[in-house]
Amino acid sequence: MASYDLIVIGSGTAAQVAVGRVRAAGWSVAVIDHRPFGGTCALRGCDPKRMLVSGEEAIDAARRMARHGVDGTLAIDWPDLMAFKRTFTDPIPAKQAHRYAELGVDALHGVARFAGPDTIVVEGRTLRARHILIASGARPVPLGIPGEDLVSTSDAFLELQALPRRIVLIGGGYVAAEFSHLAARAGAEVTILQRAERLLPHFDPDLVGWLTPRFEALGIRVETGATVTRVERSGSGLLVHAERQGEPDLSVAADLVVHAAGRGPDLKALDLSAGEVAVQDGRLQLDAHLRSISNPRVYAAGDAAGVGPRLTPVSSHDAKVVAANLLDGPTHQPDYRGVPSVAFTLPPIAAVGLSEEAARRGGVALRVNAASTPDWFTARRLAEPVYGHKLLIDEDTDLILGAHLVGPNADEVINVFGLAIRHGLTAADLRSTMFAYPTGASDVGYMLT
Image (cartoon, rainbow, N blue to C red; front, top):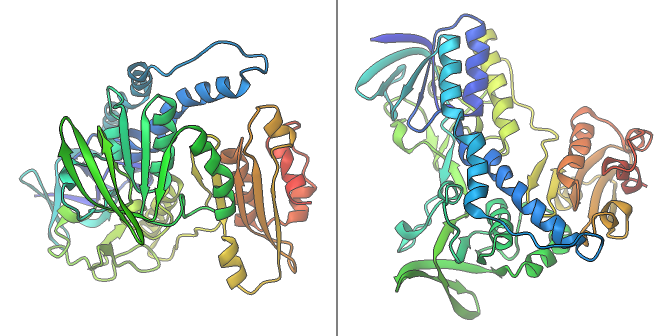
């Protein structure tokens, strides 16, 4: 039986960071993944999505600048755009396997499961470890509806070789918003069926309201308060049925239906009970150090841990915390202050820190700087009709409690506010900073005035 200091289940961001750190300390390590090495972000998430968004950015820029000195018509060639994406994603598994080999890490393909508190079985092999890190990522939460087997996933959407004419997205969060913009600009008829009463519920409702006309301008049909009840075949396509309280039920025809209604920790195949790893409501029970409360050999990081926001920088941060705890003893805790989040619609919408509702619940003397500002230079030079901000400031301390942005450069400028929140910079600190001008960041001072 092979023995290791650490076995890592998963090969994404969290796994890569943890492996590098413990190997540098001389630990023996095995990595196991039943999918190609590289993880969700690099292969099936953030990075390939942004590669595709690059295509729609060009289309959107040309349309906005029509009649402003730009002439001609552009269109997305979907197969070519997918080929562009693959120039990034295709080499990753081999590169990752090569990196593991260079580090002296045993990299195994197969489904891992616990066979004891310190024992993992994969493809008929039994491995033992002093410690185990669960970094298996996330998977779509079950919809629990008839016809669920007819519903595709976001992973599959990012591999489409041809774009279907009619697409229905179940859910109204990040994935639905981003995919709807991309697909609509590529020529598809898109419908979003969102159970909640508004799109993008994790973002500020005022800013979502300012962004909503961009969905409308793209011809995206948005149905909120719509709970999908079943999906069925209809001729050569699909029919999606949804209920709305107090209103007529909906039936929407589609060629492709995509699950965009949320993901949860991917733990099902691990047989955690055999590993004496406590789970409640589908989530690992962890202590403040990201360690299993029932099996101190086991740690978790990233989406599998399900503690911090489900974002790639959080996975990396969790992995650093876990590695430090493995090497130094369990004394380190994660710190999720100032983690920005972005939905890569066009234009993007971003947030960091507290929502206005949460800030008001905190009982502080709150100053809110909010405005829709499409007349500012940043928006005008790009002919972008959507631009706005909402900043939440503690009147007593001048600390920034939350920042919410929508419009050009929101995905970059939000990092300035993330830095301020994480490191205790005040609104006065940011106002006194000299940013390069004219850039998106140079608007920060005006937002805080």
